[in-house]
Length: 382
Image (cartoon, rainbow, N blue to C red; front, side, top):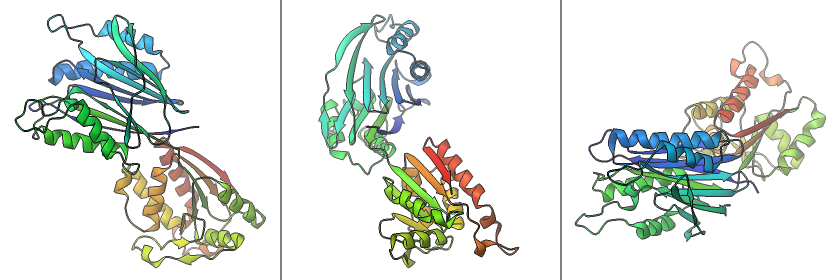
């Protein structure tokens, strides 16, 4: 089964430093997601350079198809041991998750990553071996819906150590906190920010060390099918509605005429929700079995404006059709558009706003921006 991977990161720099000595690299390939968290020796500019070199090298090599042994051999040669402190110039954690849910975790002198499912911690077996003279821990396991991982540097695990008040974290307390705060409704980015915010608070808002966290949440992929406009040939009405209803995931209908076609073919009522009215777009409709029914061109343009701002999901609020459409598209992993090409006799003539005439271009822009976000977008025309 394919999985969807949501990744969020957050960092705190040591009090008094201009740069964080940790680095996080996130890379995506056609078949996997890669996360590298590196902790440079010390803090400040030098640590930042060392960790950036480590994270970037590992992320780029894996993205280009390199094998993990080759990556670690390269890092071993690039980042020797400090002769004075007998410590690695940069420690690191590498995680790779494939589309079918196979995960590989390798850790070199970083704190062990937290692995969980829902509100429980898991502890898959880690194997130690030596690569390029470095003792590493590695782990192979499978992930699916509701699995999560949190990779944290020393600055998170030991937040508050040595302070008078008994507020300090340690590995056990961090694990309990993570298991207790997991929520399927919380995005990886929001969860990472919450962890960093609490970490900063434990430090008294003056971190004594660089602190970095990468949150990886796994869930089932969310598919959305959007039907926009009536087919050119009325004989295809039943076929497009049947495709819509047989699709898994969320079903969206855009356009007043299109909504009437869907209601007619299904033999169901189409009603208007007046509470969704706004100054910008017409109100949404409701049809039993359809998740969202909106007006056409005006709503599409406003939804496109939302998406062009590249917001987090939490930033798109409102009951109006455009906000709800943008929110659905932002949460989707894959989107399939069925675009009807029939001319709308109501929208013809010199007095008709250009927005209706250029609806096809609006749809094209919508598809492009979703693809730029990394979503799998397909389309077909009737």
